[in-house]
Length: 286
Image (cartoon, rainbow, N blue to C red; front, top):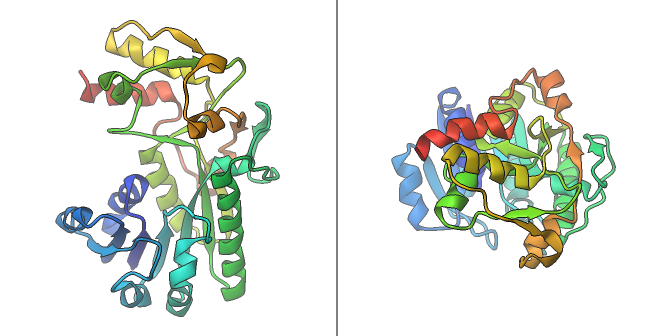
């Protein structure tokens, strides 16, 4: 059992830690040379991969991999892993391939519920690229008769990346757009759900998201309550100073169902809503 991870970042590292005891060897890629020693110190083999050219040593590592996880975003040229290492993965004939995608592929549904059978209507360029990358991986799976599982993730948070950090850095804001909701997912539940899915190899799409789509301003207000501080004033979305990317997030309004993960994988979410998660995370900020 050998796992190779393209993109040992926030989510990739959490998954590597989650399944560490299940594998004899785990290796992962990073774009940053200074992260190589960090991965090695954690007990993982590290490889540099910038997505522009094949990474040194990756072909050999993939030849022995039984499981491959992709946690790298596509770009204008397509999926970097398929562009540079598709033949290596095909030759390895892995038992399982996992691809981390985003619920952004669904686009805007005006607050309605969506599930894995809902048609994708991507709005932003990055979501359009994700839909194309998902199709490329599904085509790759069909061509080579591999099991490829696609995990559509909602807004990721967890230790070091949460509402408390925004307060700590003075960046907490309560933006209000009437009717707007978002789903979220704690990084520990990404790791847990992917680990559960590894036990059931199949070509399948899973939404990995919490139980409760909620207005973003509610999360900020609850974090303020836990911190014992006054919540920041409400700011109307129309008048807010936002980057084009931040503003585009608010153009996609939907409620994402996680029933397939629960029913088919038997997974129980550790942090099913933001309140449970924030009550745990506050311990690091007391």
